[in-house]
Length: 105
Image 1 (tube, one colour):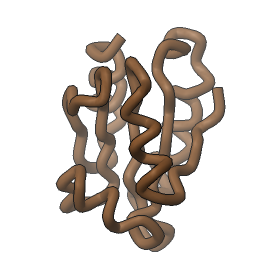
Image 2 (cartoon, rainbow, N blue to C red):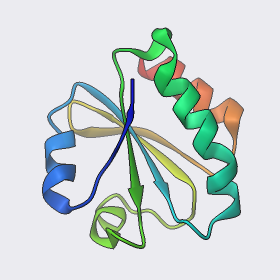
Image 3 (cartoon, rainbow, N blue to C red):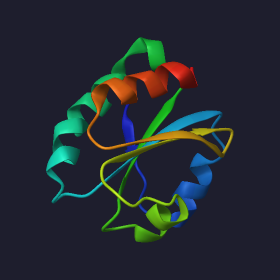
């Protein structure tokens, strides 16, 4: 499944309609974000996580979405269940991201 880029606040509002979603908040200048991006894509392609919709938000392009979700550090992975925050992982921690996805499904 592809990772969908969120370009504006309206697209973010549509994400809230998904039963299960995870958002990767990143920036192009963020080294740890660049390390985690291919791993996030691998998770999105894993058949185990087909119930989860994967999104990403460049906080330099859509800062209002990062503000709404309380993003303070990058990368931040924000999990949603039926539009409500389920949990989050801050930093380039692959094990914690995997555990978050396992808990989400």
